[in-house]
Length: 303
Image (cartoon, rainbow, N blue to C red; front, side, top):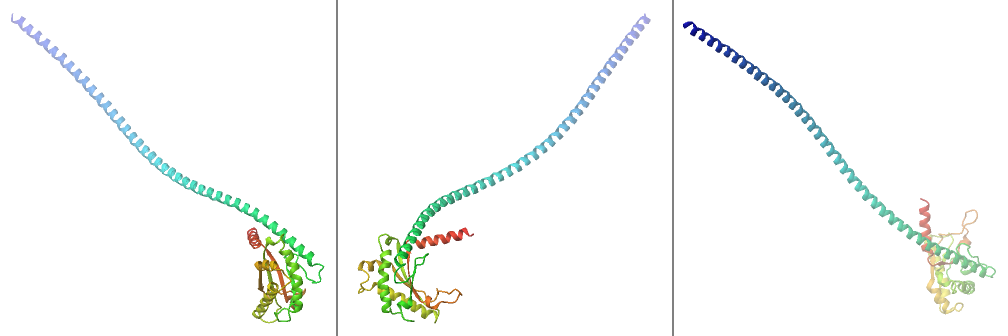
C-alpha cells in the first residue's frame, strides 16, 4: 500500500516537474520572442532615427538652399527695381528730349515761315533797289551833270571841287547850281508814288582826303554834308516844291565820315581829289533788318 502511494507521489512529482520544465521552456520562448521583438523594434527605431536625422539634414540643406534662393531673388528684385528706376529716369529723359525736339521742330517751322517772309521781303527789296538804280541811271546817264550811279548800292558821288572851295564847307555858286539841277531830278524818282513808300532814309555823307588829322576832317566832312542838306531844305529855295521839302525832311540825315573811306588808285595809294566828295544814297525799309538776318545766316552756315 505504501508502495502504491509512493509511486503515485513519484508520478505526480514527475508530472509537475515536466509541467514546470514545459512552462519554463514556454517562458523562455516568450522571453526570446519579446527580446527579439524589442531588438527588432530597437533596430527599426534606430533606422527611423537615422532616417529622421537624414531627413532633418536634408531639410536643413533645403532650408539653406531656400534661403540662398530667397537672397538671390531679393538681389534680383533689387536689381530689377534699380533697372526699373533707371528705365523710368530714361523714359523721363526721353520725354524731355521729345518735348525739346517738338519745341525745336515748332521753332524750325516758325523760322522757316519767318525765312519765307523775309525772303519775300528780300526779293522785293532787291527788286525795288534794282528798279531804283536803273531809274537813276536812266535819269542821269546822258545828263550834263556827269555823275555816276553805283550799280550795287545806288549811291551817287558828287565831286566836292564842284560844291566847295578847298578846305571850305560853304557851297560855291556852281555847287548851288549843281544841286538845283540834281536834287529835283533825284527826288522826282525817290519820292515818286511808286517808290516813296519803300524809302526809309536818304543820307548825305561828307568825305575828305587824308591830309590833316581825323577830327578836323570829321568836322569838315560833317559841315559839308550839313551845307548840302541845308541848301536843299531851306525855305527860300525854289528848285524844290514845298511838298518835296516836307517829304525830304522826313527821311533826310547827314553824316561826316572824315577820311575813313578814301578812294584808292590802282597802285593802292590814296586818290586825294576823288576822296574829297559828297555822296547821297538811299536806304529801303526793312533793309537793315534783312542785312542783319543775312549776316546771322552767313555766320550760321559758316560754322
